[in-house]
Length: 179
Image 1 (cartoon, rainbow, N blue to C red):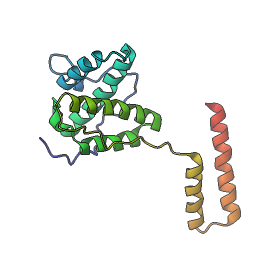
Image 2: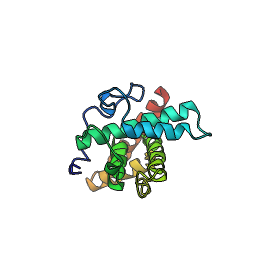
Image 3: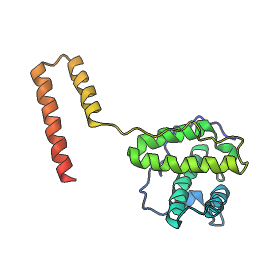
């Protein structure tokens, strides 16, 4: 297995729009899904409580993970041995830096289901996703507090700081109305 030193590397083809078809890099030469993705698909189809759209969403998210890992490791086929807790944590960091919190958390939820599959089917000794946690949503109030501290550290006058913060609040209100 190649060194894991480039796991923080963001492949040039990611992040991609969630509406795009699956990238060719997750497919084998025959045009089928990665073997792990095929096995995961069969596992999900055996679950009685999952709708077809849930299965499709799980597969889409896991395939994005497999693509990211394939490109990071420069391996065409990913096997269960490639998927470690460290890899899953690196992917969590990638998602956190690439997507809004809600999107990243959906991908992480799918990855956790995939980790459960790996452990339940004996492909992994333990669930490699056990250490994953949800990506926290960043609150505007927290960001404004950090920015206020930054401005104070720049030795700006209290009135200048107040004006900067007021301008940002006005902009955010305007942007919210535009959405």
